[in-house]
Image (cartoon, rainbow over all chains, first blue to last red; front, side, top):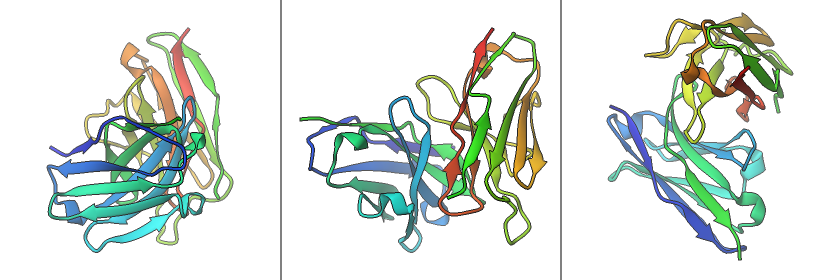
Length: 117
Length: 112
């Protein structure tokens, strides 16, 4: 069965960076796009971007250009998102989600990132 | 960006009753390939969103037939019949026809 296991809660300082992971299992990692989605406290969902692990191609929501960097390691079937120059605005839950035919069919459990000094 | 306007914001329903959620887009969601990429998700408290309906009207595996989706162009609806306690949570529509992908602002389904 398809599973996306994300890394644990992060407490980070302003102006720093954080890298969160999403380990995929139960399917061929290189055959599906992996997307990242942000949910700020009490708010809705925002799409950050996708990576295609098969060739490393990426596409970002312009809003997150320079903020998020997506990578993937085929050997471990793990997708990563690095967030840089963190501010309190980046405090949120971050989800990874697999897509098939333009929709997200499986989601990770989410990673809470808190930016605080 | 395509703006997805979801109504109502809050929807009190009685158990066993029917609920209807509207999602309107600021431009047509018909892709150049002829498909319409409008999908519906339910986020239960403390959980990640789960797929209910994909491409307007197709129920995802394991989703009860109490859930149905309809619509075209810019106007879409999710209907839930015979509401059960497990249906409570936040419902979101998602368009993936245009970049960037955008979600509706959500509808909270709660018990009346």
